[in-house]
Image (cartoon, each protein chain N blue to C red):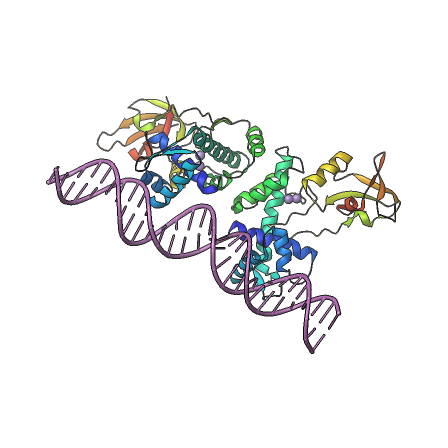
Length: 216
Length: 216
DNA sequence: TTCTTTTTTTAGATATAACTAAATATTAAT
DNA sequence: ATTAATATTTAGTTATATCTAAAAAAAGAA
Ligand SMILES: [Mn+2]
Ligand SMILES: [Mn+2]
Ligand SMILES: [Mn+2]
Ligand SMILES: [Mn+2]
């Protein structure tokens, strides 16, 4: 299993969460920041290894084996993120790039010992669920902030976008996992909302509200 | 800096410790378990990047920049080994292969935070010195067990060979870093020696004694 | 249905890092 | 000083993972 193969499997796994049915060559190409022709090549390779099901011109789907491999990469990525934040004082906007590298380290013992060392965390620093050894992962049963209505309350449990720029914006506004939010007002025109965290009230755009997961 | 380039620099660094003058193509090929022709190719590349000095048919030497890069890889390798043993309950014979992967992770912050997290260790689990950020590393001023004479005493401070098989042999004999050894007898014929650790006496071959570093 | 646009695949090229086999340079031996 | 052995380099090939450009298939519009 090469690093490139692993990255493709992970990309297909994440895309399958968002879209259903076969994942298109183009969608994969966009996610991987590569060209469709490169994707076709790799898909053939993964197909030969029975990690994806592929019929040309129809998209691909992960096989059970493919899903398991993808989940194990995601497991590693998220456990390493927890390690970086909890043990090495990284902030949540600094961890992703390093975890992209660490997720490819191959050692069963390493990742299981790390899991134990971290106290078997259930979520990573962005609120994303961490798969167990068998690839099982609790769903994001949570709801996006944008769907809440006036006077609704909830607790921030995750972010959909974990780009550094978005996370830094949240830091600046004092928005963090675990904080309680009350929706003070919602503007129908642009879907912006006025929210309250602790005693402070301020307005956020729909784009922001669309990337924050809440537990009601 | 590719993974392959890093591995070559590290190999040349280690070989420079043992031999002096230019390091031969063949010596590098043997260490890297590859072919001399591949080494020539890579050496040209490293030479273009001014990481080694190279004149064909004479060996290579690391430039200052080459030494610095090599030391930083070794620093990472050894710090990760400490992490695995101290924090994740690996044994000293299990860490090397995983550290071979981890040493290529690129993040200044990661390695410096790890260093701090581990309490700025000076030596790895095999007794090898850990270079600081600037590539400075305390020498192995220590002496090999094989050079001790009858009735000499010392403390085990390191191993020259860190292969899993050798380390497991040491474990089996109860030989570990920090233990006190007294040389009871030395057989001139084959250089084997009878040694005492705690109250136990047993015989070890020259090959063993040649791979254990002692502080007198 | 026929034409147009979009998507996907194929064909061919490039870069990296290997390898084998052959050529060349160096070193050792006679 | 030749010759023989060894070490090193060059030349040419392979595998992986990219890319561009062209061909082919599918989807959408007229
Ligand atoms: Mn991430
Ligand atoms: Mn994450
Ligand atoms: Mn090691
Ligand atoms: Mn070591």
